[in-house]
Picture 1 (cartoon, rainbow, N blue to C red):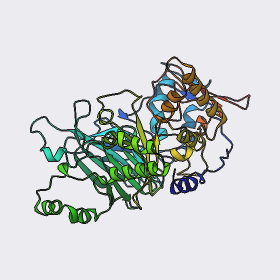
Picture 2: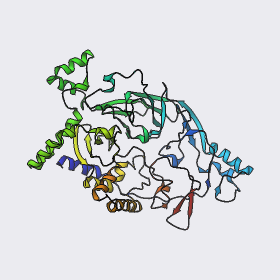
Picture 3: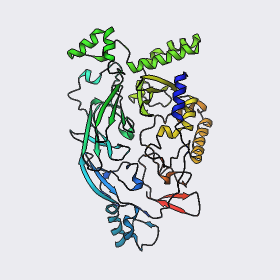
Picture 4: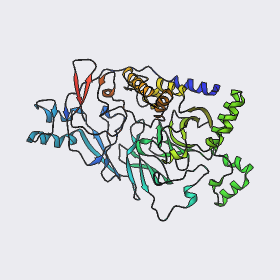
Length: 484
């Protein structure tokens, strides 16, 4: 790689800090099948363990119900004198009474905020919290009707736009920011006739006060600043252009581009030039071929030039306020026509301020895998909200590292496996969605062991089992049971 690449990588990974564990507290009471409001419940705020909030979505998926968590002591008087450690689904009068009052004891309703409109529904797997946990960003979407069909140049707004299909239909999207303290809807941004992957926050990423949104359909990354008052401020748009004045530069060579833009007759889908972001990627790869110094490297660049031009952005994440980590792959994969995980893909590190491509890795890169294994928490942004957390990753936890090594060895030794396939599978986790990993100490494998089929550090819906989840303390004799 280049010296700029090496310098940036050194600066980025130098931020890794030695993890320190504080003591853990034991919980010892379990209830099952507690009645609660009929609503979808996404992950709560990053400070829920401190008793500062929770936000279920209402059952109609158009409004947000905001609750305040009262702490584990809120139901102390209800459970006083109750024998045993598990409040099961008993039919005796006291058990029924306790279960019926538990939710309202733990959670007090503060606000109900109407959010989604125009036929849109909130995505229950999309929520991002600001660092101060004052505001939450949620997304809503509505399918476009078959008739009337959207105009051609609404669907294809630049030369990189992908072709939609029934597996990847177009929708109207809205992103809303709500003040959790007042319940007020502060701001909304809309994306019409587009494709933004809201589920599990895959298409949007919040790092401190910088919000990035990937439009898969238009192959554009929209960057906003989230203010303390809860409003979105446009920062930049990356895709067709990388600088705001790029249109003036292009019009010096193609005067018709600016003329059509001024008259409202612009059709960027037919641009005669390469998309600015894609051009920077191609220039970086060409310079690497030149630095290699061999004729073979240049021949390979020309050989795969058309395939490189056809690459499309699939996923992205923010590494910090200035750098994007983007995954490129074929259009068939991006539009879900093909689900083969062995498809070739590339990871690109892009500086939004200087508009430079700093590094490019293939999805079989041993170098990238080494960085990911040694500095996993920096990709997860595990210590973003608080330095005192319990990240359980292969780079900070021996137990998690052993699990990953076993997984890697299983792939290497499997039929049709091998080292390359193992690298591809492990790098398939990248980019990592924002706020998708829990920092709860009860999920720290150095403190507790548990069955990861029922609970894991990754925030994903899990099947509710018939038995309570058992966490075993690594420091006996304390045996613990957690809520399901």
